[in-house]
Length: 387
Ligand code: NZQ
Ligand code: ZN
Image 1 (cartoon, rainbow, N blue to C red):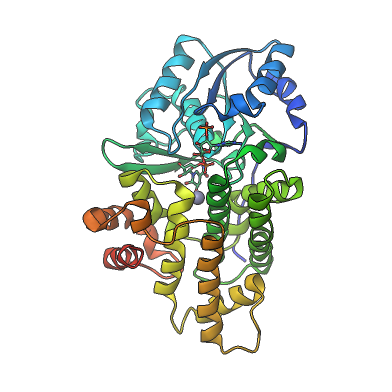
Image 2 (cartoon, protein in one colour; image 1 turned 180 degrees about the vertical axis):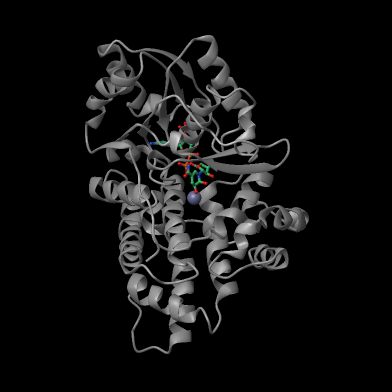
């Protein structure tokens, strides 16, 4: 196992009714916050009312920024930064899923940065300080509630880029699984695919040196396979929602990648789909992942896929290794389909028009360090396989 430093300072209050802790937590750190939310789901499921009551009860004033888009836009981040400065705010409270939380992170860092916040995703500057970030999570998917990453889109230039900085770790996250019961089945499915993809990106790493992380990854994948369909069939199944929510946080909070080299492949390819076509992140991942698996399967990699098949899909140990590997990939595809997720880019209205440009943009130096290094041509081929 390689050396590492693990420092996740986010305070997590997990479970039913934990929003009761929000007011006191915010008041410890901020007196006037920007309350950020999306298209209105938080007004329908009680999250907005619960948060507002908490702020009032603890004497925290707030200004609101609503309408954060799925795949949050840089212009919304800029608007939040403007509000923080004009209204002299000293904290950012996100109510929603990953898009709202990522937007809040961009705002919190942008408010203390003397420049355009697009500099962060563009890689021109790294955030060094940020206003305290508070989150009330409403969707199990991205893990943004417990990581330091934000993904922001600029639709004018077809760019969707991530940045990460320790100051962007939320100070406090309220994780009440009951808030996710109002999710439509399609978002529950997309979220489950996203959790699985984060886990798989960490699991399929260039070397296998972390027994603990590998077993933990398999446990998270099994939990998704077990509880994803339950949450879709019975939306208010609390155990299912709770397991998915905690899996989401642990799939990407750094634990699974500690002590081993990890280079993410499918996410980078998906971000180009969203940048050009604004597709739902988890949907893009569900389409690309099995095709990426098929493409990188070889004599060198089949043992890893076979292990994945045994551990996650309960495949018969006595099957020949290659057969097991192929069956594991097919199980992955079948599972996403059973969740109701599309299998092809054509189904979501994407054709090959921009593939060459998307592959060129997706191919960063990161692909030299992935499970199987990929060239621009390889990425292009995976897009074509996904049509
Ligand atoms: O906008 P509202 O009305 O809130 O509706 C949202 C949105 O339409 C709805 N929703 C969320 N919670 C709900 C709900 N509807 C009913 N009941 C609830 N409880 O769901 C829709 C999608 O929400 P969104 O926040 O976009 O989903 P998600 O959490 O999947 O976030 C996706 C974004 O996060 C980025 C993605 O690229 C994408 O931009 N990612 C962020 C990461 C990170 N910060 O670490 C890593 C990920 O890999 C990912 O890239
Ligand atoms: Zn993701």
